[in-house]
Image 1 (cartoon, rainbow, N blue to C red):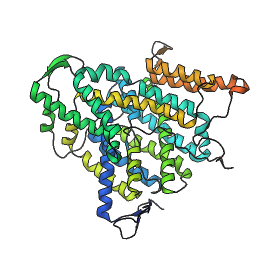
Image 2 (image 1 turned 45 degrees about the horizontal axis):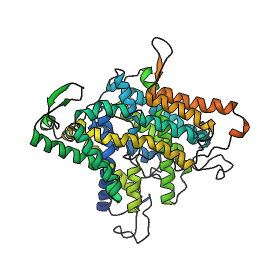
Image 3 (image 1 turned 180 degrees about the vertical axis):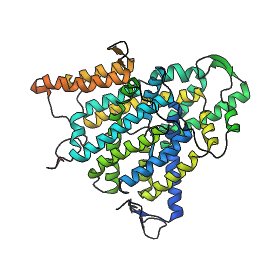
Image 4 (image 1 turned 90 degrees about the vertical axis):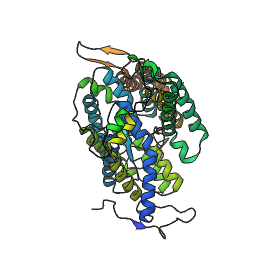
Amino acid sequence: MNLGVRWTLHGDGRTPAPGAVVRPDERLSWPRTVGLGAQHVVAMFGASFVAPVLMGLDPNLAIMMSGVATIVFLLATQGRVPSYLGCSLSFVGVAAVIRAQGGSSATVTGAVFVVGAALFLVGLAVRRFGARIIHATMPPIVTGAVVMLIGFNLAPVTAATYWPQDQWTALSVMLFTGLAVVCLRGFWSRVAIFLGLVFGYALSWALDLVFGRIHSADASGKVTDHWRLDLSGVGQADWFGLPNLHGPSFEWSAILVALPVVIALIAENAGHVKAVGEMTGDNLDDKLGTAISADGVGSMLSTAVGGPPNTTYSENIGVMAATRVYSTAAYWAAACFALLFGLCPKFGAVVAAIPGGVLGGITVILYGMIGLLGAQIWINAKVDLRNPLNLVPAAAGIIIGVGNVTMEFTDTFSLSGIALGTLVVITGYHALRAFAPAHLKTQEPLLDEGTSSYDDSGRGDPGDESPQRASS
């Protein structure tokens, strides 16, 4: 059985010729391959430890399980789809909602485990029936609206939790991060969120040194005098040790909040496979279902032990595009580095010490960018919002999601926010389409901007308009 773990040496193994591409089944010399793996770790680092912190989960475990998920993905796709699976930012809002309802970390990971299982089943369906099953259920108007409401639903988290802890640091970090995103070039622009965190970390330390403690709300919302940057836990943490493991807990209310995110994950995976196929010159349509299922399995493994879910990372696509090295050997090296990082509790303590004001400045930009990626899906797919068939369900679902509107069905069961907004978008679109007059039922652009590329087997080009995370 081909597991994609054998590589031929590209050229002399040193420097590829001008214009040459190092294919997924090739590699450079092992020292260079290891160096490229380290670069991939740096690229994914920002979002992969920001996301678990925002979700209230162990960043050490997140990093370690991202390595495990990446290995699973590479084996499942037989080394044909170079990809790193890091912690998904799409679930940050879900975690915030579940915790606001009184849920614990186990409740969060239990809900997300079910999403991973659903993603796995969707991947199997795509393998069996082709990509058309995705296009028919979730056209771009639906996918874009769901991604948008997931991102914008996070606004109260920034406004009520992070920003009040240190408003001036939050403002400074927001401005610095914005400048980094816009003004930096190449690799550095792709890790702008990470640079913003480093800047905020250093600024908080300097402000503590100069002005002493701050009188503001702490992480629990209680107004006290406290240090902006509390490093007491770093000194107490060990250099080596296993991260904190815990099993998931399953509650229907939490599961219903989390399930809509599966739509964003499907779109992310489709876009990733399409982008990699275009860069390598390989037709990877036959691997779309496998990639989606592998992502689901990786997320299930991670959440089963208390870690966050995973998804493919656009940051690492950027590294491949810049280096023109698509060798999966580099991703194996990156996965091994991640496993080692996960076994260092002191690293996790440094991450856990990130001040709330710093997260406030980061999330103002990050959450907004996640939401606006939904609009990017509409633009890429040329969605016509002048058509009421598109406009009405999207408008209603987004307002419900952003405003956290609640529908109480019984004394013990209700739907609100992300879950209710997604349900309104999907069911509203298909119900309205069933009753709409013929002149409104124009052909929806599919993930590849049309049906012309579909062959008789029903397998299509998965397209490239999926939401690529600004950080992840």
